[in-house]
Length: 311
Ligand SMILES: NC(=O)c1ccc[n+]([C@@H]2O[C@H](COP(=O)([O-])OP(=O)(O)OC[C@H]3O[C@@H](n4cnc5c(N)ncnc54)[C@H](O)[C@@H]3O)[C@@H](O)[C@H]2O)c1
Image (cartoon, rainbow, N blue to C red):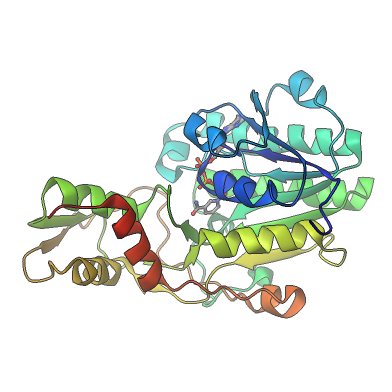
């Protein structure tokens, strides 16, 4: 089983998209896995599909319940409010979940002297002028979601420096794969409804760095076991960027409907939308030996096959 054998591991947000894939892997590596999730956006099917994990349906803001869980050695903190437009409409709720919620999870880690791996986001960089963006670019959040993730990161740093906690910050680009939400699935939903038209929200010129969830899980498992990642921050992206309009074209070509489907754009994006995400991932590659493998094209084929679209 390796380094995690015998370790007590907790995954907050384990019923969500990335949490499910992570827990699916972790149940092979440890016999003591707990999913802690309030199911606000997570799914009970995801929990059921990780049969070896114990499930606690509770909120990270419920500090009493969180801290009354058995002592943990390693916490992956993934629970979050993840929708940027929602954060702009509901900044207080976003702050509570992402900033205060992270502080609660840090308190649990402090109580247990547990290691903590924090899921942060490209949103902390805002609209970066440095492309590809390195970890050193610094915080320039552009949305309430980005800002609440910055606060979460800063508390992690503080707990590492002042309480000596073993903490690793991982900043994700656009994670995708089976069971995912997001642009690839939105496009497939729209095409399933009407294969003659595909509307892109925004100009279509927004550009994203798509990293497959299996590669993200590899990195999370690696940092969870690493002795040298303590106190460090890693970009988790594929290291390439693609315009959303080109993603749409790629998907139509894979589906074989590129001559039939008309692509349109709304021209107007949502508040807080980032223009370009393009990560420099060389730090994770060099220091952790991580190497994202899954290409966008092969993963889109996998997602399409899974959806079994009849066009
Ligand atoms: N998916 C991406 O592309 C992406 C990109 C950057 C960062 N991230 C970060 O990765 C993490 C996981 O994202 P995801 O895509 O799996 O999202 P998700 O919405 O699928 O999962 C989040 C999980 O957290 C749970 N949750 C939310 N609030 C909670 C609370 N107060 N108490 C307990 N549980 C709560 C939800 O029920 C859900 O299961 C998040 O922290 C997110 O900010 C994701």
